[in-house]
Length: 531
Image (cartoon, rainbow, N blue to C red; front, side, top):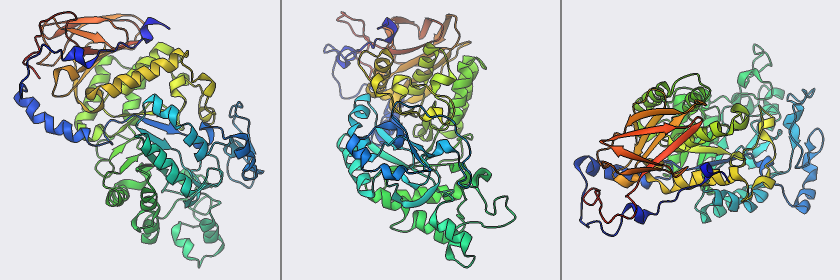
Protein backbone atom coordinates (compact mmCIF):
# COMPACT_ATOMS: atom_id res chain seq x y z
CA UNK A 1 0.00 0.00 0.00
CA UNK A 2 1.23 3.50 -0.80
CA UNK A 3 2.29 5.65 2.14
CA UNK A 4 -0.18 8.34 1.05
CA UNK A 5 -3.07 5.97 1.66
CA UNK A 6 -2.16 5.16 5.25
CA UNK A 7 -4.29 6.60 8.02
CA UNK A 8 -2.45 8.32 10.83
CA UNK A 9 -4.34 7.61 14.02
CA UNK A 10 -3.84 10.08 16.86
CA UNK A 11 -5.33 8.72 20.07
CA UNK A 12 -7.52 11.12 21.98
CA UNK A 13 -5.14 10.77 24.91
CA UNK A 14 -2.43 12.33 22.80
CA UNK A 15 -4.57 15.41 22.38
CA UNK A 16 -5.48 15.61 26.06
CA UNK A 17 -2.54 14.17 28.03
CA UNK A 18 -2.76 13.35 31.73
CA UNK A 19 -0.45 16.24 32.70
CA UNK A 20 -3.05 18.84 31.68
CA UNK A 21 -4.66 20.74 34.51
CA UNK A 22 -8.24 19.94 35.34
CA UNK A 23 -10.77 22.70 35.86
CA UNK A 24 -14.54 23.07 35.50
CA UNK A 25 -14.31 25.48 32.59
CA UNK A 26 -11.45 26.79 30.46
CA UNK A 27 -13.74 27.99 27.67
CA UNK A 28 -13.72 31.52 26.32
CA UNK A 29 -16.88 33.59 25.84
CA UNK A 30 -17.38 32.60 22.22
CA UNK A 31 -17.01 28.91 23.00
CA UNK A 32 -19.48 29.11 25.88
CA UNK A 33 -22.03 30.50 23.43
CA UNK A 34 -21.23 27.87 20.81
CA UNK A 35 -21.27 24.85 23.15
CA UNK A 36 -25.08 24.47 23.50
CA UNK A 37 -25.50 24.85 19.73
CA UNK A 38 -23.03 22.00 19.17
CA UNK A 39 -24.77 19.84 21.77
CA UNK A 40 -28.05 20.35 19.94
CA UNK A 41 -26.42 19.40 16.63
CA UNK A 42 -24.84 16.35 18.25
CA UNK A 43 -28.28 15.08 19.27
CA UNK A 44 -29.74 15.40 15.75
CA UNK A 45 -28.98 12.40 13.52
CA UNK A 46 -29.88 14.44 10.44
CA UNK A 47 -26.79 16.62 10.86
CA UNK A 48 -23.66 15.35 9.14
CA UNK A 49 -24.33 11.62 8.76
CA UNK A 50 -22.58 9.44 6.17
CA UNK A 51 -25.32 8.36 3.74
CA UNK A 52 -24.98 5.19 1.66
CA UNK A 53 -27.19 4.99 -1.45
CA UNK A 54 -28.35 1.62 -2.79
CA UNK A 55 -30.04 0.74 -6.09
CA UNK A 56 -31.75 -2.38 -4.74
CA UNK A 57 -31.88 -4.47 -7.93
CA UNK A 58 -28.12 -4.07 -8.46
CA UNK A 59 -26.69 -4.19 -4.93
CA UNK A 60 -26.81 -7.74 -3.56
CA UNK A 61 -27.46 -10.95 -5.50
CA UNK A 62 -29.99 -13.26 -3.85
CA UNK A 63 -29.21 -16.90 -3.16
CA UNK A 64 -29.88 -19.16 -6.18
CA UNK A 65 -32.93 -20.73 -4.54
CA UNK A 66 -34.44 -17.36 -3.70
CA UNK A 67 -33.82 -16.16 -7.24
CA UNK A 68 -35.43 -19.25 -8.76
CA UNK A 69 -38.53 -18.70 -6.65
CA UNK A 70 -39.16 -15.30 -8.21
CA UNK A 71 -38.03 -15.73 -11.82
CA UNK A 72 -41.62 -15.34 -12.97
CA UNK A 73 -41.46 -11.65 -12.04
CA UNK A 74 -38.92 -11.12 -14.83
CA UNK A 75 -40.99 -12.54 -17.71
CA UNK A 76 -40.83 -10.78 -21.10
CA UNK A 77 -40.61 -7.97 -21.92
CA UNK A 78 -38.49 -7.92 -18.77
CA UNK A 79 -35.11 -9.67 -18.81
CA UNK A 80 -33.03 -11.19 -15.98
CA UNK A 81 -29.27 -10.79 -16.36
CA UNK A 82 -26.30 -12.60 -14.83
CA UNK A 83 -24.60 -10.71 -12.01
CA UNK A 84 -21.35 -10.27 -13.94
CA UNK A 85 -23.11 -8.72 -16.96
CA UNK A 86 -22.88 -4.96 -17.42
CA UNK A 87 -25.87 -2.77 -18.32
CA UNK A 88 -26.00 -1.66 -21.94
CA UNK A 89 -28.12 1.02 -23.61
CA UNK A 90 -31.15 -0.40 -25.34
CA UNK A 91 -33.72 0.59 -27.92
CA UNK A 92 -37.22 1.90 -27.38
CA UNK A 93 -39.74 -0.89 -26.82
CA UNK A 94 -42.73 -0.32 -29.06
CA UNK A 95 -46.04 -0.06 -27.23
CA UNK A 96 -44.34 0.06 -23.81
CA UNK A 97 -43.10 3.64 -23.68
CA UNK A 98 -39.63 3.01 -22.27
CA UNK A 99 -36.20 1.77 -23.30
CA UNK A 100 -35.29 -1.91 -23.23
CA UNK A 101 -32.48 -1.34 -20.70
CA UNK A 102 -35.12 -0.06 -18.27
CA UNK A 103 -36.54 -3.59 -18.28
CA UNK A 104 -33.24 -5.39 -17.57
CA UNK A 105 -32.99 -6.79 -14.05
CA UNK A 106 -30.25 -8.36 -11.96
CA UNK A 107 -32.41 -9.80 -9.16
CA UNK A 108 -31.42 -7.90 -6.02
CA UNK A 109 -34.10 -7.52 -3.36
CA UNK A 110 -34.67 -6.37 0.22
CA UNK A 111 -33.70 -9.70 1.77
CA UNK A 112 -30.41 -9.93 -0.13
CA UNK A 113 -29.75 -6.33 0.92
CA UNK A 114 -30.32 -7.26 4.57
CA UNK A 115 -27.62 -9.92 4.27
CA UNK A 116 -25.13 -7.24 3.14
CA UNK A 117 -25.85 -4.78 5.96
CA UNK A 118 -22.60 -5.82 7.70
CA UNK A 119 -20.66 -4.30 4.77
CA UNK A 120 -22.51 -0.99 5.05
CA UNK A 121 -22.00 -1.06 8.81
CA UNK A 122 -18.26 -1.79 8.54
CA UNK A 123 -17.87 1.00 6.03
CA UNK A 124 -19.10 3.41 8.71
CA UNK A 125 -22.35 4.64 7.15
CA UNK A 126 -25.03 6.19 9.34
CA UNK A 127 -27.94 6.25 6.88
CA UNK A 128 -29.05 3.73 4.24
CA UNK A 129 -30.95 5.42 1.41
CA UNK A 130 -32.76 3.26 -1.16
CA UNK A 131 -33.80 4.15 -4.67
CA UNK A 132 -37.57 3.59 -5.12
CA UNK A 133 -38.91 0.24 -3.92
CA UNK A 134 -42.63 0.66 -4.62
CA UNK A 135 -44.43 -1.39 -7.28
CA UNK A 136 -43.41 -0.25 -10.76
CA UNK A 137 -42.88 -1.67 -14.22
CA UNK A 138 -39.26 -0.65 -14.80
CA UNK A 139 -36.09 -1.52 -12.89
CA UNK A 140 -35.59 2.06 -11.68
CA UNK A 141 -39.12 2.29 -10.16
CA UNK A 142 -39.61 5.97 -10.89
CA UNK A 143 -42.79 4.95 -12.77
CA UNK A 144 -44.88 3.88 -9.77
CA UNK A 145 -47.90 1.64 -10.19
CA UNK A 146 -48.83 1.66 -6.50
CA UNK A 147 -46.95 3.65 -3.84
CA UNK A 148 -48.36 1.63 -0.95
CA UNK A 149 -47.15 -1.71 -2.31
CA UNK A 150 -43.53 -2.85 -2.50
CA UNK A 151 -42.52 -4.16 -5.91
CA UNK A 152 -42.98 -7.95 -5.61
CA UNK A 153 -39.53 -8.80 -6.99
CA UNK A 154 -38.13 -6.74 -4.10
CA UNK A 155 -40.35 -8.13 -1.34
CA UNK A 156 -43.18 -6.77 0.80
CA UNK A 157 -44.04 -4.15 3.39
CA UNK A 158 -43.13 -6.71 6.04
CA UNK A 159 -39.68 -6.92 4.47
CA UNK A 160 -39.39 -3.14 4.78
CA UNK A 161 -40.23 -3.42 8.48
CA UNK A 162 -37.63 -6.16 8.93
CA UNK A 163 -35.00 -4.16 7.06
CA UNK A 164 -35.73 -1.08 9.19
CA UNK A 165 -35.44 -3.13 12.38
CA UNK A 166 -32.13 -4.67 11.24
CA UNK A 167 -30.81 -1.21 10.35
CA UNK A 168 -31.77 0.18 13.73
CA UNK A 169 -30.11 -2.74 15.50
CA UNK A 170 -26.88 -1.64 13.79
CA UNK A 171 -27.38 2.06 14.51
CA UNK A 172 -28.34 2.77 10.89
CA UNK A 173 -31.23 4.96 9.75
CA UNK A 174 -33.32 3.95 6.72
CA UNK A 175 -34.62 6.42 4.13
CA UNK A 176 -36.77 5.75 1.09
CA UNK A 177 -37.15 7.53 -2.26
CA UNK A 178 -40.51 9.30 -2.55
CA UNK A 179 -41.60 9.87 -6.16
CA UNK A 180 -44.69 12.05 -5.65
CA UNK A 181 -44.56 14.22 -8.76
CA UNK A 182 -45.61 11.48 -11.16
CA UNK A 183 -46.55 7.82 -11.53
CA UNK A 184 -46.10 5.31 -14.36
CA UNK A 185 -48.20 4.83 -17.46
CA UNK A 186 -48.89 1.22 -16.42
CA UNK A 187 -50.38 2.31 -13.07
CA UNK A 188 -53.92 0.89 -12.82
CA UNK A 189 -55.26 4.22 -11.55
CA UNK A 190 -53.86 6.02 -14.61
CA UNK A 191 -55.17 3.41 -17.01
CA UNK A 192 -58.62 3.80 -15.46
CA UNK A 193 -58.37 7.56 -15.85
CA UNK A 194 -57.65 7.12 -19.57
CA UNK A 195 -60.49 4.64 -20.09
CA UNK A 196 -63.27 6.43 -18.22
CA UNK A 197 -63.64 10.23 -18.29
CA UNK A 198 -66.23 9.94 -15.51
CA UNK A 199 -63.90 8.01 -13.20
CA UNK A 200 -62.72 9.61 -9.97
CA UNK A 201 -59.23 8.58 -11.05
CA UNK A 202 -59.36 11.21 -13.80
CA UNK A 203 -58.91 13.94 -11.17
CA UNK A 204 -55.55 12.42 -10.16
CA UNK A 205 -54.02 13.44 -13.49
CA UNK A 206 -54.23 16.17 -16.10
CA UNK A 207 -55.68 14.30 -19.06
CA UNK A 208 -56.08 16.67 -21.96
CA UNK A 209 -55.71 16.24 -25.76
CA UNK A 210 -53.84 19.54 -25.86
CA UNK A 211 -50.81 17.72 -24.46
CA UNK A 212 -48.47 15.87 -26.83
CA UNK A 213 -49.30 12.49 -25.27
CA UNK A 214 -52.84 13.34 -24.21
CA UNK A 215 -51.78 13.94 -20.61
CA UNK A 216 -49.33 16.13 -18.72
CA UNK A 217 -46.11 14.16 -18.36
CA UNK A 218 -42.84 14.79 -16.57
CA UNK A 219 -40.42 16.28 -19.11
CA UNK A 220 -42.91 15.13 -21.78
CA UNK A 221 -42.09 11.47 -21.10
CA UNK A 222 -45.24 9.52 -21.99
CA UNK A 223 -44.36 6.83 -19.45
CA UNK A 224 -44.42 9.31 -16.53
CA UNK A 225 -47.86 10.97 -16.19
CA UNK A 226 -47.74 13.78 -13.64
CA UNK A 227 -49.97 13.75 -10.58
CA UNK A 228 -52.43 16.56 -9.99
CA UNK A 229 -51.11 17.72 -6.63
CA UNK A 230 -53.65 20.56 -6.61
CA UNK A 231 -56.29 17.88 -5.90
CA UNK A 232 -56.71 17.56 -2.10
CA UNK A 233 -57.63 13.87 -2.46
CA UNK A 234 -54.29 13.17 -4.10
CA UNK A 235 -52.41 15.03 -1.37
CA UNK A 236 -54.40 13.20 1.29
CA UNK A 237 -53.44 9.75 -0.02
CA UNK A 238 -49.82 10.74 -0.55
CA UNK A 239 -49.09 12.51 2.75
CA UNK A 240 -52.06 13.93 4.67
CA UNK A 241 -54.08 10.86 5.68
CA UNK A 242 -52.98 8.89 8.78
CA UNK A 243 -52.39 5.85 6.54
CA UNK A 244 -50.94 7.84 3.62
CA UNK A 245 -47.78 6.87 1.80
CA UNK A 246 -45.49 9.27 3.68
CA UNK A 247 -46.93 8.57 7.12
CA UNK A 248 -47.47 4.84 6.61
CA UNK A 249 -43.88 3.95 5.82
CA UNK A 250 -42.66 6.11 8.70
CA UNK A 251 -44.94 4.06 10.94
CA UNK A 252 -43.31 0.94 9.48
CA UNK A 253 -39.99 2.10 10.92
CA UNK A 254 -38.57 4.09 8.02
CA UNK A 255 -36.75 7.22 9.22
CA UNK A 256 -37.30 9.62 6.35
CA UNK A 257 -37.78 10.40 2.69
CA UNK A 258 -35.61 11.60 -0.15
CA UNK A 259 -38.06 13.39 -2.45
CA UNK A 260 -37.55 12.86 -6.17
CA UNK A 261 -37.61 15.94 -8.46
CA UNK A 262 -38.41 18.06 -5.41
CA UNK A 263 -38.01 21.25 -7.47
CA UNK A 264 -41.12 20.16 -9.43
CA UNK A 265 -43.17 19.83 -6.24
CA UNK A 266 -42.56 23.43 -5.22
CA UNK A 267 -42.13 25.12 -1.86
CA UNK A 268 -45.73 24.78 -0.63
CA UNK A 269 -46.15 21.06 -1.30
CA UNK A 270 -42.68 20.29 0.06
CA UNK A 271 -43.52 22.13 3.27
CA UNK A 272 -46.71 20.07 3.57
CA UNK A 273 -44.82 16.80 3.12
CA UNK A 274 -42.17 17.79 5.66
CA UNK A 275 -44.83 18.86 8.15
CA UNK A 276 -46.70 15.56 7.74
CA UNK A 277 -43.49 13.60 8.21
CA UNK A 278 -42.50 15.56 11.32
CA UNK A 279 -45.99 15.20 12.77
CA UNK A 280 -45.74 11.42 12.36
CA UNK A 281 -42.11 11.15 13.44
CA UNK A 282 -40.68 14.38 14.92
CA UNK A 283 -37.12 13.21 14.22
CA UNK A 284 -37.84 12.12 10.64
CA UNK A 285 -35.91 13.61 7.74
CA UNK A 286 -37.01 14.95 4.35
CA UNK A 287 -34.31 15.63 1.76
CA UNK A 288 -35.18 17.11 -1.62
CA UNK A 289 -33.57 16.43 -4.97
CA UNK A 290 -32.79 20.08 -5.73
CA UNK A 291 -30.39 20.93 -8.56
CA UNK A 292 -30.93 24.67 -7.95
CA UNK A 293 -29.20 27.08 -5.60
CA UNK A 294 -30.09 25.76 -2.13
CA UNK A 295 -30.74 29.01 -0.24
CA UNK A 296 -34.56 29.18 0.01
CA UNK A 297 -35.54 25.49 -0.04
CA UNK A 298 -35.30 25.18 3.74
CA UNK A 299 -37.30 24.96 5.97
CA UNK A 300 -39.79 23.56 3.43
CA UNK A 301 -37.29 20.66 3.51
CA UNK A 302 -34.87 19.53 6.19
CA UNK A 303 -32.15 19.59 3.57
CA UNK A 304 -31.40 19.27 -0.12
CA UNK A 305 -29.12 17.16 -2.24
CA UNK A 306 -26.49 19.85 -2.66
CA UNK A 307 -25.80 19.68 -6.39
CA UNK A 308 -24.69 23.32 -6.36
CA UNK A 309 -21.77 22.41 -4.09
CA UNK A 310 -21.11 19.39 -6.33
CA UNK A 311 -20.81 21.65 -9.38
CA UNK A 312 -18.39 23.95 -7.57
CA UNK A 313 -16.23 20.98 -6.55
CA UNK A 314 -16.19 19.47 -10.05
CA UNK A 315 -15.49 22.80 -11.78
CA UNK A 316 -12.61 23.41 -9.35
CA UNK A 317 -11.20 19.92 -9.84
CA UNK A 318 -11.46 20.26 -13.62
CA UNK A 319 -9.46 23.49 -13.49
CA UNK A 320 -12.34 25.78 -14.45
CA UNK A 321 -11.79 27.97 -11.39
CA UNK A 322 -9.08 28.62 -8.83
CA UNK A 323 -9.19 27.30 -5.29
CA UNK A 324 -9.75 30.80 -3.94
CA UNK A 325 -12.78 31.35 -6.20
CA UNK A 326 -14.22 27.93 -5.34
CA UNK A 327 -13.81 28.81 -1.68
CA UNK A 328 -15.60 32.14 -2.12
CA UNK A 329 -18.51 30.48 -3.93
CA UNK A 330 -18.84 27.84 -1.20
CA UNK A 331 -18.62 30.53 1.48
CA UNK A 332 -21.37 32.60 -0.17
CA UNK A 333 -23.60 29.53 -0.49
CA UNK A 334 -23.14 28.66 3.19
CA UNK A 335 -23.74 32.26 4.30
CA UNK A 336 -26.88 32.56 2.14
CA UNK A 337 -28.34 29.21 3.17
CA UNK A 338 -27.22 29.12 6.80
CA UNK A 339 -24.87 26.61 8.41
CA UNK A 340 -27.69 24.88 10.32
CA UNK A 341 -29.43 24.06 7.03
CA UNK A 342 -26.24 23.23 5.13
CA UNK A 343 -25.21 20.67 7.77
CA UNK A 344 -28.33 18.64 6.91
CA UNK A 345 -27.84 18.83 3.14
CA UNK A 346 -26.43 15.82 1.31
CA UNK A 347 -23.11 16.29 -0.50
CA UNK A 348 -23.26 14.31 -3.74
CA UNK A 349 -20.43 13.59 -6.16
CA UNK A 350 -22.18 10.88 -8.17
CA UNK A 351 -25.40 8.87 -8.08
CA UNK A 352 -27.84 6.95 -10.27
CA UNK A 353 -28.51 10.06 -12.40
CA UNK A 354 -24.88 10.96 -13.12
CA UNK A 355 -21.79 9.27 -14.43
CA UNK A 356 -19.68 7.77 -11.66
CA UNK A 357 -16.77 9.79 -10.35
CA UNK A 358 -14.32 7.33 -11.97
CA UNK A 359 -15.79 8.37 -15.31
CA UNK A 360 -16.01 12.10 -14.52
CA UNK A 361 -12.44 12.37 -13.17
CA UNK A 362 -9.90 10.06 -14.80
CA UNK A 363 -6.96 10.60 -12.41
CA UNK A 364 -7.18 8.61 -9.17
CA UNK A 365 -5.36 11.09 -6.94
CA UNK A 366 -7.67 13.86 -8.11
CA UNK A 367 -10.69 11.66 -7.31
CA UNK A 368 -9.26 11.31 -3.82
CA UNK A 369 -9.15 15.09 -3.51
CA UNK A 370 -12.83 15.10 -4.51
CA UNK A 371 -13.68 12.57 -1.82
CA UNK A 372 -11.74 14.47 0.83
CA UNK A 373 -13.76 17.58 -0.02
CA UNK A 374 -16.99 15.58 0.07
CA UNK A 375 -16.15 14.32 3.57
CA UNK A 376 -14.87 17.60 5.01
CA UNK A 377 -17.18 20.32 3.66
CA UNK A 378 -20.27 21.04 5.80
CA UNK A 379 -23.07 18.58 5.11
CA UNK A 380 -23.71 14.86 4.86
CA UNK A 381 -21.60 12.94 2.31
CA UNK A 382 -23.93 10.78 0.20
CA UNK A 383 -21.98 7.80 -1.15
CA UNK A 384 -23.32 5.89 -4.15
CA UNK A 385 -22.89 2.13 -3.76
CA UNK A 386 -19.58 0.92 -5.16
CA UNK A 387 -17.82 4.26 -4.64
CA UNK A 388 -15.80 2.64 -1.87
CA UNK A 389 -14.22 0.29 -4.44
CA UNK A 390 -13.99 2.80 -7.31
CA UNK A 391 -16.65 1.16 -9.47
CA UNK A 392 -16.73 2.50 -13.00
CA UNK A 393 -19.60 3.59 -15.19
CA UNK A 394 -20.65 6.42 -17.47
CA UNK A 395 -24.16 7.79 -17.90
CA UNK A 396 -27.30 5.71 -17.37
CA UNK A 397 -27.41 2.73 -17.60
CA UNK A 398 -23.64 2.20 -17.17
CA UNK A 399 -23.69 3.94 -13.77
CA UNK A 400 -26.13 1.32 -12.45
CA UNK A 401 -23.97 -1.79 -12.82
CA UNK A 402 -24.26 -4.64 -10.30
CA UNK A 403 -22.10 -4.25 -7.19
CA UNK A 404 -18.56 -5.63 -7.57
CA UNK A 405 -18.33 -7.69 -4.39
CA UNK A 406 -15.10 -9.27 -5.64
CA UNK A 407 -13.39 -5.89 -5.05
CA UNK A 408 -14.49 -5.59 -1.42
CA UNK A 409 -11.26 -6.92 0.08
CA UNK A 410 -8.70 -5.83 2.64
CA UNK A 411 -5.93 -5.95 0.03
CA UNK A 412 -7.77 -3.40 -2.14
CA UNK A 413 -5.98 -0.09 -1.58
CA UNK A 414 -8.94 1.96 -2.81
CA UNK A 415 -11.28 0.20 -0.38
CA UNK A 416 -8.92 0.69 2.57
CA UNK A 417 -8.35 4.34 1.72
CA UNK A 418 -12.07 5.00 1.56
CA UNK A 419 -12.75 3.23 4.86
CA UNK A 420 -10.00 5.28 6.48
CA UNK A 421 -11.52 8.51 5.18
CA UNK A 422 -14.90 7.54 6.66
CA UNK A 423 -13.19 6.65 9.94
CA UNK A 424 -11.46 10.05 10.12
CA UNK A 425 -14.80 11.78 9.70
CA UNK A 426 -16.53 9.54 12.24
CA UNK A 427 -13.90 10.45 14.85
CA UNK A 428 -14.01 14.16 14.10
CA UNK A 429 -16.75 16.18 15.71
CA UNK A 430 -15.59 19.20 13.72
CA UNK A 431 -16.14 17.47 10.37
CA UNK A 432 -19.52 16.07 11.36
CA UNK A 433 -21.12 19.13 12.90
CA UNK A 434 -18.55 21.89 13.31
CA UNK A 435 -18.52 25.50 12.20
CA UNK A 436 -17.12 26.57 8.83
CA UNK A 437 -14.46 29.17 8.11
CA UNK A 438 -13.01 30.04 4.73
CA UNK A 439 -9.23 30.55 4.77
CA UNK A 440 -7.49 33.05 2.51
CA UNK A 441 -5.44 31.47 -0.27
CA UNK A 442 -4.37 32.40 -3.78
CA UNK A 443 -4.40 28.99 -5.46
CA UNK A 444 -5.45 26.42 -2.87
CA UNK A 445 -8.97 25.68 -1.72
CA UNK A 446 -8.47 26.19 2.02
CA UNK A 447 -11.02 26.10 4.81
CA UNK A 448 -11.41 25.23 8.44
CA UNK A 449 -13.96 23.30 10.52
CA UNK A 450 -14.01 23.78 14.27
CA UNK A 451 -16.02 23.29 17.46
CA UNK A 452 -15.61 24.81 20.91
CA UNK A 453 -12.46 22.76 21.64
CA UNK A 454 -8.94 23.23 20.30
CA UNK A 455 -8.37 19.54 19.59
CA UNK A 456 -11.51 19.33 17.42
CA UNK A 457 -10.24 21.64 14.68
CA UNK A 458 -9.63 20.52 11.10
CA UNK A 459 -7.81 22.54 8.42
CA UNK A 460 -8.23 21.40 4.83
CA UNK A 461 -6.00 22.58 1.97
CA UNK A 462 -6.63 21.14 -1.49
CA UNK A 463 -4.59 21.43 -4.67
CA UNK A 464 -6.37 20.49 -7.91
CA UNK A 465 -3.31 21.39 -10.02
CA UNK A 466 -0.95 18.63 -11.20
CA UNK A 467 1.94 20.78 -9.91
CA UNK A 468 2.87 21.36 -6.26
CA UNK A 469 1.69 24.60 -4.67
CA UNK A 470 3.48 26.33 -1.78
CA UNK A 471 1.59 28.98 0.14
CA UNK A 472 1.41 30.64 3.54
CA UNK A 473 -2.08 30.31 4.98
CA UNK A 474 -3.54 32.07 8.01
CA UNK A 475 -5.31 29.59 10.29
CA UNK A 476 -8.16 31.51 11.89
CA UNK A 477 -8.25 29.82 15.29
CA UNK A 478 -7.35 31.72 18.45
CA UNK A 479 -6.69 28.59 20.51
CA UNK A 480 -4.11 26.91 18.28
CA UNK A 481 -0.72 27.54 19.87
CA UNK A 482 2.49 28.89 18.40
CA UNK A 483 4.95 26.18 17.25
CA UNK A 484 2.29 23.49 17.83
CA UNK A 485 2.09 20.85 15.09
CA UNK A 486 -0.77 20.23 12.71
CA UNK A 487 -0.70 16.64 11.43
CA UNK A 488 -2.03 15.55 8.04
CA UNK A 489 -4.35 12.62 8.74
CA UNK A 490 -3.82 11.24 5.23
CA UNK A 491 -0.02 11.18 5.01
CA UNK A 492 1.34 11.73 8.52
CA UNK A 493 3.19 14.92 7.50
CA UNK A 494 3.50 17.66 10.11
CA UNK A 495 3.12 21.38 9.60
CA UNK A 496 4.10 23.83 12.34
CA UNK A 497 2.09 26.88 13.32
CA UNK A 498 3.94 30.20 13.47
CA UNK A 499 1.93 33.09 14.90
CA UNK A 500 -1.29 31.62 13.51
CA UNK A 501 0.23 30.93 10.07
CA UNK A 502 1.22 27.71 8.36
CA UNK A 503 3.57 27.35 5.41
CA UNK A 504 2.35 24.42 3.35
CA UNK A 505 3.63 22.74 0.23
CA UNK A 506 0.79 20.70 -1.19
CA UNK A 507 1.75 18.18 -3.90
CA UNK A 508 -0.19 18.13 -7.15
CA UNK A 509 -3.62 16.48 -7.03
CA UNK A 510 -3.50 16.26 -3.25
CA UNK A 511 -5.56 17.37 -0.27
CA UNK A 512 -4.20 17.70 3.24
CA UNK A 513 -6.48 17.20 6.24
CA UNK A 514 -4.62 18.85 9.11
CA UNK A 515 -5.53 18.38 12.76
CA UNK A 516 -3.76 19.78 15.86
CA UNK A 517 -1.77 17.62 18.26
CA UNK A 518 0.50 18.02 21.25
CA UNK A 519 4.24 17.70 20.68
CA UNK A 520 5.00 14.00 21.21
CA UNK A 521 7.19 13.10 24.16
CA UNK A 522 6.89 16.49 25.85
CA UNK A 523 5.75 16.92 29.44
CA UNK A 524 4.77 20.52 28.72
CA UNK A 525 1.40 21.54 27.28
CA UNK A 526 0.59 25.03 26.05
CA UNK A 527 -3.03 23.87 25.96
CA UNK A 528 -3.26 23.19 29.68
CA UNK A 529 -5.63 26.10 30.36
CA UNK A 530 -7.41 26.23 27.01
CA UNK A 531 -10.50 24.22 26.29
